[in-house]
Length: 212
Image (tube, rainbow, N blue to C red; front, side):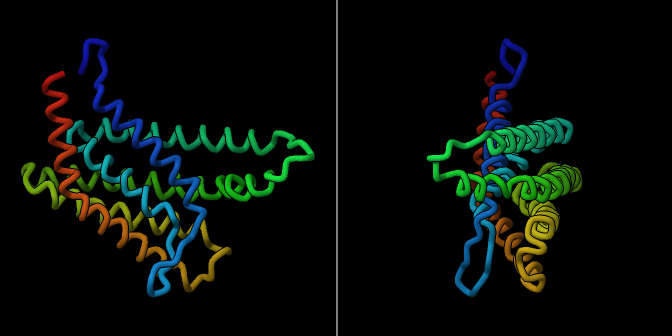
């Protein structure tokens, strides 16, 4: 906490959290195929950053602060989509050829927003709650257990909500369960590999708070 009454590390974490969340919603409409025919939204490369920060914040600042940051991200998403909708509604000049391409990218955002917000609210709250619960059970030991354990729960719930709402009707129904499992597994593996980064981030934030 600095002399202005706010935590600079928390502000920085919250900013990155919100940016990663909003950008994820934009790029989630792009699908890509991995070896083996596994189809995933492009956002799987970025969205785990939200969960990594979503582990650091409750670990350092507690569940109440984590919930406030989650709501801040929710508000940022709503604001972004409102501005996208307003921009799309503006009349385009006749000579401009980019309107349909622009609409293709951002016009899909409202549905992705609904999918993202439902998955986001369910998944991030579950992630924070499970992390704090495991922390109490283990007496604050084994950070790796609570970051990975909370991610498994949070990402599975998030992926189930997001994939179902975002792609039902546009992707063959039998493909959806595989997308849910593949996305949850990919994101969980991402976070597991990033565990050393999470440890380093928690330690760095605690040092910054101690010296503030």
